[in-house]
Length: 370
Image 1 (tube, helix red, strand yellow):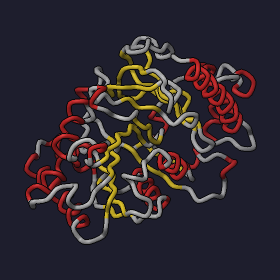
Image 2: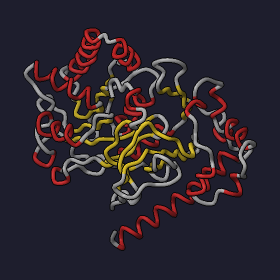
Image 3: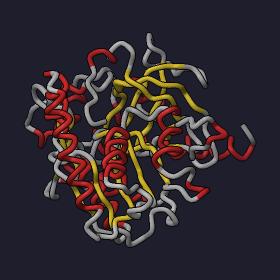
Image 4: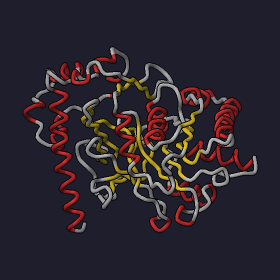
């Protein structure tokens, strides 16, 4: 690590420590905290207001349990400091049983405004219209992408897509129904893209992008020919092999040589989204993600001790922290594993690459449209 990068990393760690302290005080102060965390405070064997002095002190908390997010009353998650403000509730999961719910006030706007700053205007021109080819319904993602388009002075077109139905079709083995539903979703997208709406940018998942490309080819056209210049995508299928295939076979080659620009992201309802390090053929199309510190942090930790990070390049499970004044997650074990990546100039903190389903859960995970 160069001296310049080491200095940037140290400054980023200082900002993270300061932000952690501020966030903990907000969520555990009687005047501003949420009923959930104020109630949980009495169960802790330490005082968050006195004993948390840095980000590393968050390890004093027990791991965040996703079952806490199932069922109500959902208002127990709204901090007193935000009382009276319009509040959204977004869901994740829910194919069977009670879905997990997260309350949001403005976090989805803030997260995607920060993400907007990372998008190159050459490929995501300001004022361009967008297509959201992804899940609809009670999903944060749909409203977030719509806000991203509006923030960049565009208009967002959406389709109807129920990912819970997709997962049910897969589990039932109804492949003919699944194929028809996929076709139904892709037909909606192609209708928008060929209706003269001047859509240049889009969000989609790897699986849906591949299906869209096939649908366009059947109609004798391509993503480039219909005017798409920039795609941001997120999902579980982002392997170096798939990304190379995507760039070479679907996007018309690298963006630097006139192809469609694509940037992978890694995110969820709890965190927002992590950006990827620029992808190059020279780097073997490796995809490394970096969380939007200090609002969220990802660590790669050992499989037998979730408080111990692995070494750089080593494999471990992904651990997530969310640190905003709307939502506090002091350590949640994701259903993913990957390799720990070193800081670099654009994001001077740790990243994670090779993200894939956690091996102990992989057989029980149905990823559906993602």
